Picture 1 (tube, rainbow, N blue to C red):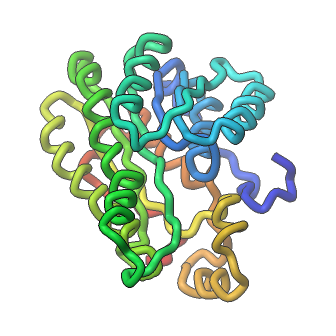
Picture 2 (picture 1 turned 90 degrees about the horizontal axis):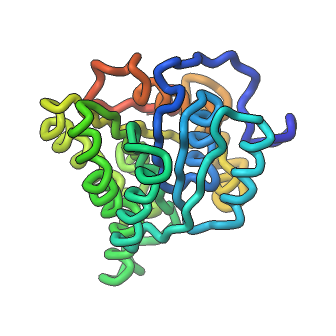
Length: 266
């Protein structure tokens, strides 16, 4: 990305994790935004990455950017609508055939479209839960058996600080994201004896292209920075560093936890 790209993090020297080299990683919603940052950072670690998304155009751009880095493994993209559970689970099975058993699952895909409680219909309520929560469980259902058989793995669910902040401009999204923590804590207990870890990483306001083009306003950013302890934007590459830590052997003792990456806003 260009140095003046508003979604690019300031220059940092990040950690390298030897345990992530050649590790198979499956990321949902990886074509852009936070997901693209996660895919890119795993590629830079030498991991074998498969990602799914509904946006094939953005995915192709990401694959090309990653290929230009001359990585150990180029990422693999599968076009999938995660609302389709059969297709989602088939994509996990395909990744395991082509790249090897999934070591790391990152459930990231979501849509934070704004809506009010007054305009909510039963159909849109179901859509919000299907888009932002349901596939998390069924992706885990597809990936966990191989982790259990192998004796370990890391599942990382991307949540949102929105429900913790009592943000009220997308109730269906906020309710779905609060459910992510229920999945994390329940399955961490279920999978713990098999050394499969389950954690949640929650972003605050992260400067992605979607956020900056659809929801950004000077007043909104001023309020966010006022509330944050760190008085600057948070970027996808920075957010991804916690995901890498939890995926690597370095995070081997962490499970059933929430990790909030929000610049000290909460």
